Length: 417
Image (tube, rainbow, N blue to C red; front, side, top):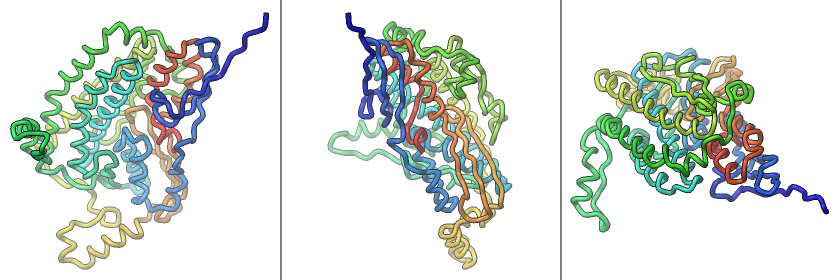
């Protein structure tokens, strides 16, 4: 009898469950995965190399395009690295705004993961539910920066501008009548702070709805329980961070272990799993959305009571006030020099990292004293997590490999860089 050999299967790069431009070569024995070989580089944008020919400010919008589900979190690490080299103090109000939007970004990311992972597991309903709330969060992005995704809102020394006093309103159209528009604009009558406050009040019930759909759903549990198990020691050895590590039971979160900005003033818990399977990682992300909502509410309450500057007054790093430019030629020249030549950063090197929604996201900067980085190195969580895919998939069925890939929560903008 002839020996039956394993066969290989191309999974992607154009595959609805591939979560980006990943070509995954699977070696199968029947339907059992023997080996998973990720082929990356199909979305390579040369961000690290491009930064060497751009001023520090010009490179900031590239950060949004790395993990394009966690835009402001990428900007956050980049700004922290520059501020570390400059020895720059960030106004306290700007720190609260940064923390608030970092947590808004975390919820946006987890909703994107929840919808796409649920869809991979066969539930298109959860995709519609999660995008319903994500729409409101993207409206917050748009209100503060003018862009729904690529915000470029964080700046070295603070943020681009203070929170606006009004929210954009929906307008009547042929599709929607006046009554429907009035209902849609019901929570948009006040400022952005009011809109965010309203969101924090109703979001816990929305998370309850997600859990009603999935948490005890027997199909969801069959697809996730006992799949892709990673114990604590192995998770650490593989370099896993974020929900991937906390799902294995280790309460490691940089917001607690190495606090930055005003996270040491925040009251929140670190959710952890027990067995380190796909289901635990799902539960961790659900709990993290609840904790992020708590942090956002604390920031809202503080920001209401504490006005102040939102960017440094060092005009070599931050643009001068628009009113000042109208009456002061020196300020106008500062403005032009900042956006044409940028600012010089002292010689040295710095590493800054944040607790990104997917794990530890780090920026390593080397400056030679010029107005652009000598070298920029990005430490993305997704690249590390993808390297664990082979080990996590072996011995599972082909359908399980879909859920293992999904639980990694990878975005190829930051895997390929």
